[in-house]
Image 1 (cartoon, rainbow, N blue to C red):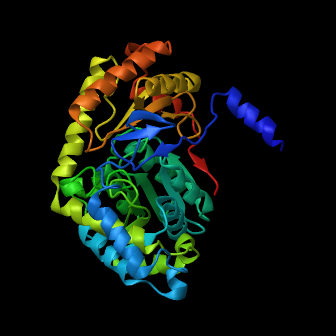
Image 2 (image 1 turned 180 degrees about the vertical axis):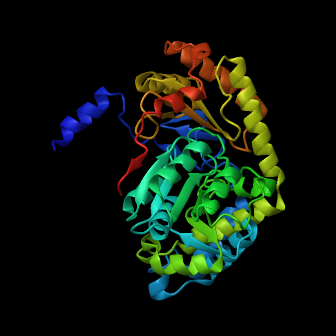
Image 3 (image 1 turned 135 degrees about the vertical axis):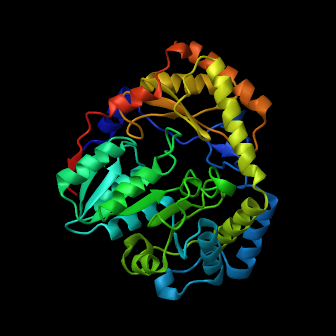
Length: 409
């Protein structure tokens, strides 16, 4: 394969990507490539990444335990700071145990592949995150893809495959759409058919549910879902991930999850930072309320600009444009206006559903969000896109209706 030819092809499709340089910490405002902008695409939802208490905890941990863990926890032992965070996360999620992973990607890779073996079937929502999709690919099981949030289609697929063991896996809050999975219905179907249930709460932890405990807790299913995957790198402002589950499942994952067994443990400073962030979340639940209020305020302002935002109920607000080149043009025009709202294009989202993916933070002000909506509205007009014609969330669903339902591992 000629790399330059492939790069030229990517560019011709409007899908080129590049790293943008941010100066300073991840706050509501940053300096992007030398230009001050309002940041509307960070997952630092509660504004904890640069909180003084979180910074101090990380700095103190580096002095006490060093900056690296040295090896896999199964090789050189687990450190006390790791165990402390696991115990706190289990209590927060209402489970017996929690197990730390190096990242959300590694957690989904390890959990799905460990729980789905040869002869099993993994039933995966078609809009699940890439880390879940890759976990399905690594598993020795078959994969059956059900239409987005479609419990009836999932039930039909289970009947068609004749699955007697396997896993139903879904995002709790979908990272590109901002909607929430029908977890109670999915769990009923999974357990009625002898299947385990895995929910990725990467964008739910700290953002939705009572005290920010996530979509699973919001549905009253704490302790019922077999494995809840969460991240430390979004609302908790640090890095890494975890799987919350019962003690037997944690022991099983410790012995079978390859991305855990063969990865160096998380650095002590990021673990200590996550401990401090979790403490802040528990002590100050109003941060979650502020985040949710800000999300509602942004949706209201965008609706006034003519955008369709009906599909989102969370801090993630997608503005579906359709064409990748147009989405990038709106993104660049918004940056010129002082707002960084990232364009998301295939393969992150299905073909024909390129969008601006807006992410609200609790540290934004309502005035900032009001001005940002107006700026994005003007940017859309500059790019030749009329917000009133914005594709509704149903268009994203329609674009995926032709995806294959069942595939081999």
